[in-house]
Length: 362
Image (cartoon, helix red, strand yellow):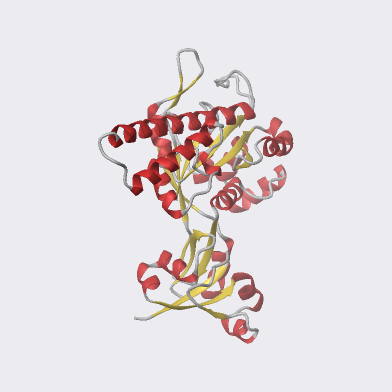
């Protein structure tokens, strides 16, 4: 999974990337024209807990790829300009994370002249909607020219119907992420990689002075953008970057001093998982304890395919117990005695935190 980090110039995108990846980019790297890309291991205390039971040869966490999308610039009038390079880079991501500035810095003033998160969010949303609408209009015009020479087949008619429906929504300033499509329609929509169709998490990048008001502001933004399919969170950029550089023991003291309950890494990845409808199931044993990420609602047979396609093709059943039940009772045998270790068929819907053992025909 790839998440693109977007935002206006000087919003703190690179600071966020460094915080999430626990790395440091020098000034040259931070300002380069190529995107900064980093893989982030998704923290999961359940894997560590299982490792205490099984003492495996290795522990494997799932990962997310974050991309600091470049190309959004200031023009000669010192206002924001969305370049074709920026839009092309954004298009390839599975989801977007919009960093919105809520900190003062006289050295790097806000490109729009003032701090106004609502304006910044609407600015990016409007650009995505306009770009999608332009793409649709170009495609419909091309189809119209082609159909003048030959009649449209059923697939062509479906494409036109889907695009016209999308255009109607966009003309009403409605992002495409709010529309529902069946599987056949969704295949058409995915081909265009529409920007306003992508899941979008808005993250306020605060300084210490504005952090106190962030919760109130988040509540206001959630109310103002209700029904727009947006998720919201906040972090203190500079503080979180200092936290990311500390050892675990020092970080715990630091978090207590600042009243931080959990790091931005844990909290924002959790928000991203919720936004994308993702869950984690677990596998464990003496060789390996591992977390696997899948979409919510997948069956045991489909989840087996996330491990290896052969496990899905030759699926017989899944032996499963929930992580919390396993930790409570301390062993698979004890869970079996309590009736908590179950045999499930191919249609079983996997839950977040399920420990699965896939049985297949060899």
